[in-house]
Length: 204
Ligand code: 5GP
Image 1 (cartoon, rainbow, N blue to C red):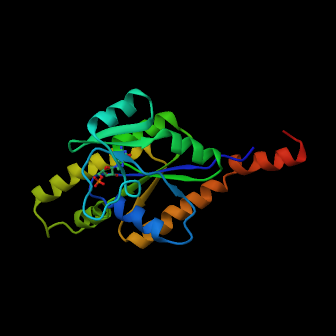
Image 2: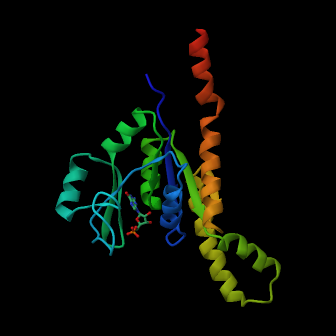
Image 3: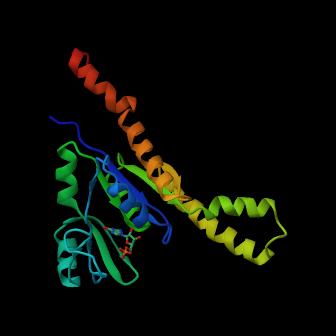
């Protein structure tokens, strides 16, 4: 039997650049992950293609998919449904390929429940470390602005708790490199590698 692939979940706060990082990863030739195309009820944007960017569905069709348990997770985000087709994920993982999801945070929490063995990567805004600098060099910005930023940062940091890794999106290429490094390391974890050797040597 083939070793199952990894389920990689990239998520993070709205506006952090998840889509941009995902597109950059999949434009690189050496990327070996399989992108799971989501289902959505939002209208296609210019240039988007059905079955490439998303599977575009009506609300009725989407609700039907929920009822028939066709979605690994789903969420309503600014008035539209978004969800991950479960059959594709299961099938691809069982072929030994890594599946990559780029989803918002409510969905990522649901995947964590269903697939605790997944690899959960939080894409963090560079504003978090900028904030640190600003706090150190106080005086350049108003107390109120800093307070508001701190409140937003606190929420973001709390969101991180559900993830295994944090990648700062200060630079798209760097963020892609960090994600690939995490996936590589994950494949080399002892608990993934050792069973293969043990099986080979009959010491299970
Ligand atoms: P957009 O409409 O800009 O393509 O995506 C809006 C948000 O939906 C983004 O944060 C994106 O990560 C998220 N998203 C895309 N596909 C899915 C999905 O299948 N499930 C969930 N929960 N969120 C998704």
